Length: 220
Image (cartoon, rainbow, N blue to C red; front, side):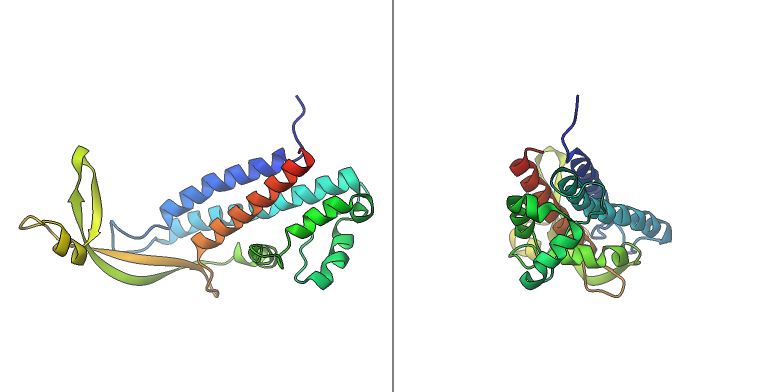
């Protein structure tokens, strides 16, 4: 059975979604220990982040490749067009997707709908301009705060963590219950203020929306 043109993009995004979940677990708020990840853990996370960013960028390239193959000058190099301003749009479009503009103005308009200068798409330029740089950067932990908390038991053997200050006012704490400390950590890419988790989540959301839009419009 023949697949759809964007099946490869969907597979990449599905893999990215799974890996993002794993990264979230690794880049957690350090609830169980005071120290942040050691070098071996950082290396493992670095590989996952690199692969996620590459998959997200490659998903966009699937769209470009299929667009040129179906509507443009097949066989020529193609890249997903990303223009920083409306005035640069057609130049970038014609260069990256040769032949598509003249044969399918509607598809051209769909590509323009998903440009960095459009509302809600600002992050696309970050993905394009920084993906090659970010994926090689070290991940840096920043300790934000140390938050005292207690574990509050729930029915069924479950528990939740409650800030100690809140617990003292609203929760009956048995004598002798230890107040623990949680170290909140924000992870960024070295030399930037870009949070790792937010970067991956925003890129995943935007690229998924773009792939879905093309898939629905072109029945791909």
